[in-house]
Length: 270
Image 1: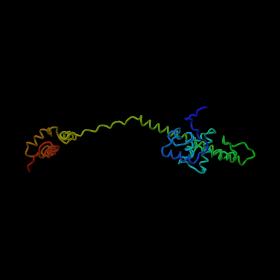
Image 2 (image 1 turned 90 degrees about the horizontal axis):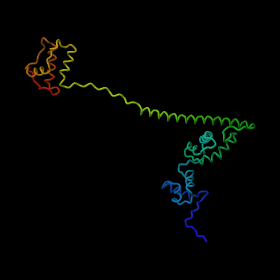
Image 3 (image 1 turned 135 degrees about the horizontal axis):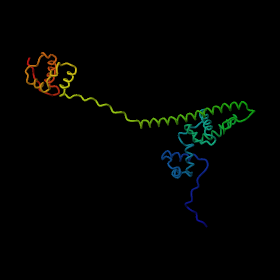
Image 4 (image 1 turned 90 degrees about the vertical axis):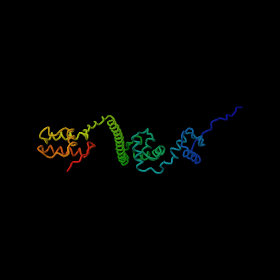
């Protein structure tokens, strides 16, 4: 007489899901998230395998699933994508172009509705080309129109894919050009501004260059001019050297007024 093993695996339930099972799965995922699908059934108190829980959630219980009748735009998208991807189509790839529609729902709608509709119109649902049917001229013309539309849609989708690839390539090229571009040349150095103590030298050089003085000895050195201003009791007036005296008066006035903090301010008697 054999002994029963207390660690026998619990037999997993198969078949349709009950409302109670849906509530348990929905409540657990809303509170904890799905996490590992393999470990979820035991944590949620379900006698289902992880794959069954995943498919139930993805195809039926997700809150963002779109329900109801397919629109004409959705039907056209399914037909042209099926023609573009071929008979070995991955329904999940088509589902990415139909927001909030599940791949299982799209597959069922194709097999129960769209496939039969194409057959009635005289179009092969595998090749999306008209069938050779001499008796059905009206259906043949309609099938030719649908096939022509499918070809245009296929060409449009391929063109869009090429544009996306070209846009990505151009973006990468522009980024590479910005990275490899040489730095801009440095700005030229600004000319140095003369210091306040060199005002007289700059004035002498400018006036000599412009011909304001008759002879090089028209002006004395800055030291002699400064001594002159300190030792003189009167300001030189315009004499035989005319413009020279005027320039000296201007310079002495600048020094006596305390420009740049140089020299002492002297008063000239009236």
